[in-house]
Image 1: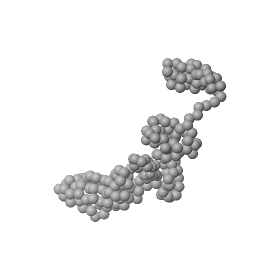
Image 2: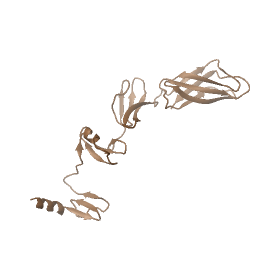
Image 3: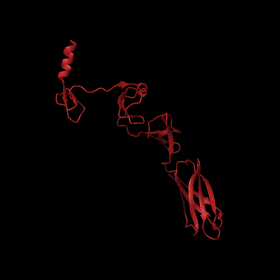
Image 4: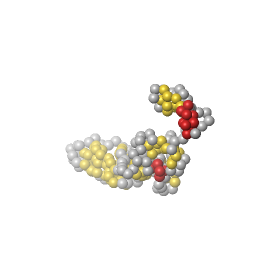
Length: 218
């Protein structure tokens, strides 16, 4: 009986220059394995997420079927990824919970802030939500009053900016023509929710920088 089953299996296989065929005696030469059927499919290993995560040193491209979320997963050199996955948007009130996957986006409907899930540490791999300034609140108007920049000197002005983080770039633009000799030499996030702008005077006389400015973070 065993011999009959083996012979039957071999009779349905074919070999061509290193290719193996199941259901065909003429496997495609470009495929290492060519499976042909009009009545059945191919099953890859099915396992829970815990079983998947227990695989030691998974090879790049390793494919399994995750029975916890009913999706195909593959190893992409760094992490298990859903096959054909796309970014998912989440919404809620307040800070995001532990949901989503790498690069997913979350909109806090209370503040308008957008968060993106990213890798925060290796190893082990950890995912964390990081706030992104992708909303209409990425700029503010500020006023500088009665500030004189001394000769060949500088003045640093600091402003509160809710949502500014150390990863953000800062741009400061006056809403009036700056007097000749004043240079905005540096604008940066000096602390969480705070930005600073440094003005430098290259002229031989003190210059006032009083006026209205617009500051944006990116």
